[in-house]
Image (cartoon, rainbow, N blue to C red; front, side):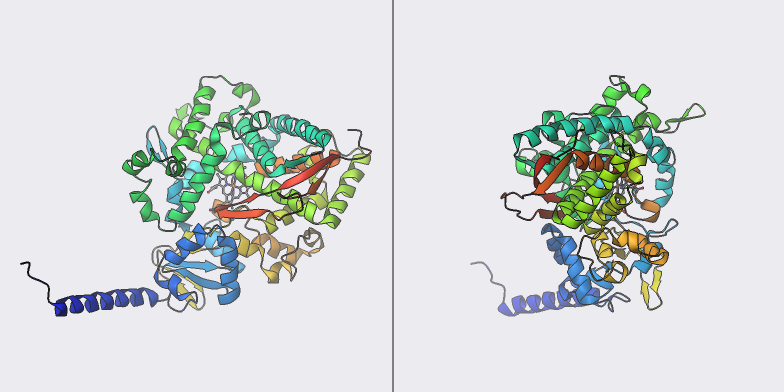
Length: 516
Ligand code: HEM
């Protein structure tokens, strides 16, 4: 007969384990300095609440709710602080900040033929980032991008042709999908001089859009506990094992995205595209200085991947927001059309509209700004790490080193003290009415493109795309939002880093009296 364990031993062990766990959790709850920061109790002891929030796909609403409940600083994890006080933006995100990107970004590193590598977006060390950015920054400058306007115009022409077809057919169009395809065609054109043809083929070519979606879903959730990544897709065994399960494989799409960029890069290097003549972005990344190679093929690949990963979804999301809010706000739509028509009548708009012309449309520029405020493309914390030795955050608050602190652009955008009590209303006028001081505050809170040292590198590309496409389209067509049910059903939002919208279905009609 097996000797049985006396019940006293079982009871004692259980009590001891419970006691130790409780003590451990209390120790975390009452960590020096962090203990005074309010927040949900469970969040302060376990990372599971953060995991659940992000997995729900509605983190932006949850973060807004937390700040309304607990105030400007909320403890959203044992070592995680979310802030809503915009006066902290310069300290956390400023140009010479000591707060570097957290390990959350590690999941965006990629595998190149030469081994694992960070991208300009995922690099954590500001020192490394500064060196990597130097040879490529010029390619993202507005002066450079203006030279790429013709590539943008080619894509706009296809977009217009397609809309013409829909207007003739009289049916509804998934405008959300079309601006996505448009943004992908532009980014592949200006990066590799190779328009992949999403609009012509009317589909997600090679499944790249779904691949990015899958990877963002994985990164957003697993990134809440980045060490988990090493036991999941961060090693080579699990990806191999899950390659037999299609639903799981779809989440490990990083390799696929890199291969998409690598394929284009190979064709580019084999001079299959007319890249040098067109002077696309790859051609402008300075690979040589004084005859010396300053950028390897692998580095070039990381920059191409960055453009694909960061450059199309964001612009598509912002274009959807512009069209959606205009359709939902008839007064703003009407005022914008009046501005476009007036400029048109004065001969101030060419066909296609140039970037410079679009910048002179002041109300339109306010519409872009307001749409991006109402709907920032990124909806999770822009996480940063408190530097070694800790940091004095406010007069009353010191944070120990390696605490993670960040702000969600959605929280910054809905600060009623900065934008007024009507923060939930799409009102482009607020950008035109504000005095200089107020405008400075509004700009400081505007995190749609991030801020400071790690501000969006592709901001000019997207401003160029949006600036040129929207007036061109609205001059010739009118849109009515009908939603997926044809009766105006609201769009749906999914926050997995990018806050993607679905259900942007519109009826498109050719505008009366337009001879264009
Ligand atoms: C409306 C469109 C866009 C929005 C709203 C947007 C938003 C952002 C935000 C919020 C960040 C900062 C992320 C952080 O701090 O964690 C960022 C960074 C970045 N974005 Fe964009 N982006 C847009 C378009 C683009 C485009 C078109 C490209 C490239 C072609 C691009 C490339 C990048 C890169 C490379 C970074 C990392 C910059 C760095 O760390 O130095 N973005 N973007």
